[in-house]
Image (cartoon, rainbow, N blue to C red):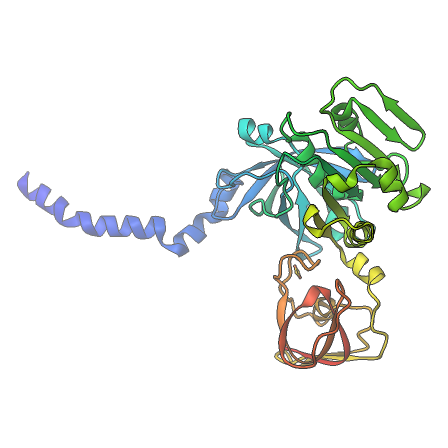
Amino acid sequence: MTEINEHTDRQTPDFMAWLQSALFNRKAVEYFHPLLTALNPLSGPELKAQVLGVYSETNSAKRLRLKPRDNWNGFLPGQYISITLEVNGKNIQRHYSICSELALWENEGLIDIAVQQAPNGEMSNWIAHHIKSNAVIRISQATGEFTSKENATPKLFIAGGSGITAIFSMLINRDSDDPAPTVIYTARGEGNHLFKNQLTHLNDTKMKTRNNLVNNQTNDNAPSVILHDSIDGRLNEKTIREYCPDLADRSIYICGSHKFTSGINQILSDIGIEKEAIHSEAFINSGDLHTTATLPSSDSLIEFTRSKTQIQDTRNKTVLELAEAAQLNPKAGCRSGICHQCKCRKTSGIVMNALTGVESSSGMEDIQACISFPIGHVKIEL
Ligand code: FES
């Protein structure tokens, strides 16, 4: 008996070492990872979410209901998550604002995002046609500084297109004693205003659309929502003043495409609104870059020095697109100048930043490949 116990005691450390190695050795975990993933799609170290539902918000927008795994930390209204999907054999990442109530997260561990289809949007088109309930997708923690800052000052929200998503989140999660905000939401064409029904319901005071002004005010604190149809004309100083005569006394939150937010910021600056009163968040996609930037037209040559490849005639292509055309598999995320994952070293030559229109120096520096257009002869360390 004693002998057996001694034998067992002597073997314990070796057995424990083996067990530990089997369970925690990285290779063992990697070995079992496919099995664990099959049993529980949300397992593993990555942040993931399961798609619980896909709903049509408009003809060109889907709302996805997601259940993030339990290492996801929650969100502040106005924040977004990044989603990474494999589309046509390459990993792409895009950002989408959360558009659901905090209570849905706190009580049920669920969130919603809205995905507006863009004409050249690789991910939004893929989601529109292929995503299914129960799919598991990679997500990030919620991030972003575009959140509601304080309650005392009445707010004016100005949204363009899918820029309403972040603002909608702030609206449905606002404190009930916040002063009544005004919302000016512009979209192109009837039926393209996201969350129209919910906004109408939220509003229940006055809802102005192109042909319709409803005013059945029952609550002084309810938002005033104006749905502007940009087919009738872009927002300008006159329309903004008409929709919100006291705009100079408000905190102003703007969200939309880079072109939209730049235009509204310019109008507000011309009116004399202080910069401190304005909070804005812009999103861009490569389609925007190609239409808003004044692109270099000269013939050019890009050399990728590490891989010893080059491409002649780089017109209308970013450094990232050129690197992909050269099959270099460059790292990228948002493709819109936000995440900095595409940062790479330019060793010589000039590039133009498509967001600012500013040309770089000709020396060595780090650039964001997704928003940089080469001018002339440029060398990149890729
Ligand atoms: S890919 Fe995100 S900044 Fe370039």
